[in-house]
Amino acid sequence: MAKKSFLTDVRTLRKRAREHIEQGAVTKGYRAKRETVLKLLNDALATEIVCVLRYKRHFFMASGIHAQSVAQEFLQHANEEQTHADQLAQRIVQLGGAPNLSPEGMLSRSHSEYVEGDGLVDMIREDLVAERVAIDSYREMIDYLGTNDSTTRRMLEGILAMEEEHAEDLATLLAELDK
Ligand SMILES: [Fe+2]
Ligand SMILES: [Fe+2]
Image (cartoon, rainbow, N blue to C red):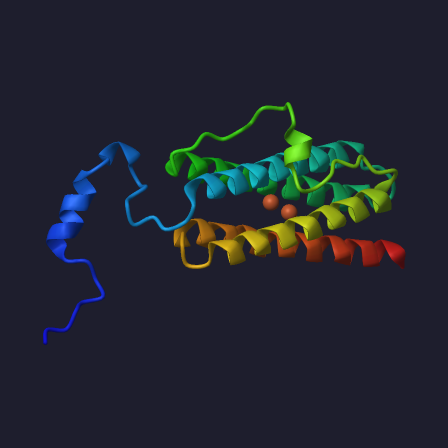
């Protein structure tokens, strides 16, 4: 008895690739639920935008004796959250969706909150809370995707790693200011 290959034979692969070429990167072999993934990515996009706005607000409002270095940290995080937003939007398009950048409902789509914060310590604490929200929501998305969309998963893993760095930075700042 001939062994059945675990790979699709070349002729079938070639034939399938010619079908629905307008779908670009999305092929018949895409195993995740595309609509669900697009919804998750758009919610994450809203989260990142809200984080950009919050960090920007904190950057401009930071004042006091420790303000300079903390403000620089806020600015760096704002820029990195913007990079995440761009990565998410790009992947949404690649999957045949459209990034939802409408300000309407942005905050309710976002996982994290927009808290202006009262003073430097309060701002850092609110940012840390938001990072911890982001960490858990990215982790859940990664678990959900499993092996069904490894490109999206890899991207989310990269973002998650950076949110963890952000949280660690903020926790360190908080501890230093507490002294
Ligand atoms: Fe981010
Ligand atoms: Fe972050």
